Length: 302
Ligand SMILES: C[S@@+](CC[C@H](N)C(=O)[O-])C[C@H]1O[C@@H](n2cnc3c(N)ncnc32)[C@H](O)[C@@H]1O
Image (cartoon, rainbow, N blue to C red):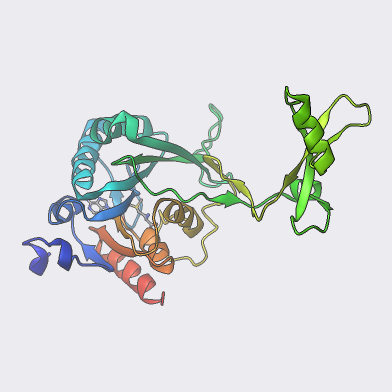
């Protein structure tokens, strides 16, 4: 840590850098309220040697204590309306939810995102369903947090339904069923303007639903279509997360110019995506090889 050991001020944060060290010590060096988004991808309590790092704890309690201390520090360094995302799997996610409720407040829980790894990632057993997902818990610190809606592209089937176009500049639309308004004058007005029509039997009412420049349907909390092998470029880090997953989170929960912190950065996936999306970033990791890989990766992004 050397020259950083006295801590930073808000005006001289080590922005756009990857810092080597135990994140407990590094987090304590940041001033309060400086980050807009924190993404944590900690060890999962797998009790195994991943080659890149040891995910070994004496007990579940020791792991939870390790996380509790770091989450408390994260809360301090978040801006008043910042967001925090914590990724984990079935081993610890429910315990982490309780910790996060305590630290950030049950009412500030925004999303439980389920990342369906597309069948990748093992955990197969003849004695239970195959474990194919990981979970991301999202909390805000305040009420006025950033959320930019992310849309999944329309399916071909859905687009095929928007096949009508009157050439009046309003664009493509589909006929969708409508519960009849109580006031018959409203129905008559809709029919006259061409916005409503009755079915041939005269029993059902339909209205014109326009695409209106929408380019997809608002994404749900189950994330599909991104697998661990979906990496744009492999960086050789065993627990590396796919960039499209981080892109979704960073686009949704931050804006260009915001500052993103990745306290367990490994190969620096969140930092790399943050940089590509015009955010500032800081990555922390205690593994010198992770920092080396992440710095190299970040340099390649212009
Ligand atoms: C699951 S990996 C993160 C992978 C990363 N998201 C990526 O895409 O490459 C967890 C990382 O946490 C780091 N780590 C574990 N304990 C740490 C600590 N106390 N301080 C800093 N880093 C730590 C490990 O070295 C490892 O790189």
